[in-house]
Length: 346
Image (tube, rainbow, N blue to C red):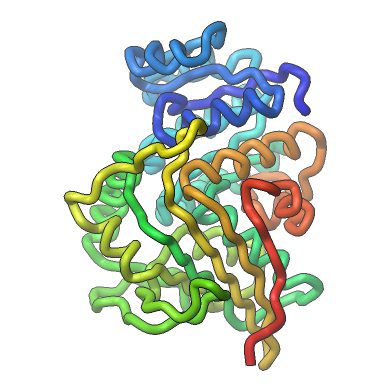
């Protein structure tokens, strides 16, 4: 349990940001509510009396510095991260504090590694992008599954979502990514990102029971293609999404997530099935849980806790699997996420 350490949350009034603020408080941290919209911050503060509110336009370094003043760490929940990541990282470096974000934007995460790797390492800083359901969880599972292997041929990450009702932030981030790619899709193959104009394949994936065999969109590429190969020597990283969830997140009329419990979680459930292959051998790890947005909060807050208690294995810009002890981190997520290692499939 934290002892009153201050953590700035940029984008605190957003859907994921609200979960992060609540979970920080549960863990004993004191969140500072920050972001671009002063009005939304005041509304958010009404649910958390006594918390400091610090509006900060992303293009005003002095305001960002005030927002992070006295904070032990900062969590960036404000997308699109193509716009917010670099300025908030700059402010974190000036403040000398760890930075964690929940970016699912592939290009924004790649930009963070490319732009800040040398500076963050030289400063002894901890910068962890994509510390979320997409990017962070898959990386932790792949790292845990690899175990004592020093390299692998392929990593496959299949997302079995019961549904996917996107937030406004998810839609905005997706629009930015599509614009940056010129409408093309992306995959990670032969050790690099490859942009393509053809349609992704549809295939069958056998998830653990009770989900079983489902149709998935192959090469439905998520942030794992940045996080996993950033530290694991794997030339092929493929991600998959159940067809129904892929259709829902793409449809313009799919509603936003609806809360069904006192924590504000939706009824959505998920299975993340990770298979690592090397030289004819195969290892597998599976995670189950509820609400991909809500479950990002314990991922982020555990990362902050470990960064502030010296439980970090790498400095600079680093992914979840590189920064932390993956098996131990995953165990710490119970009961929010259930993780198991399964016998290899024939």
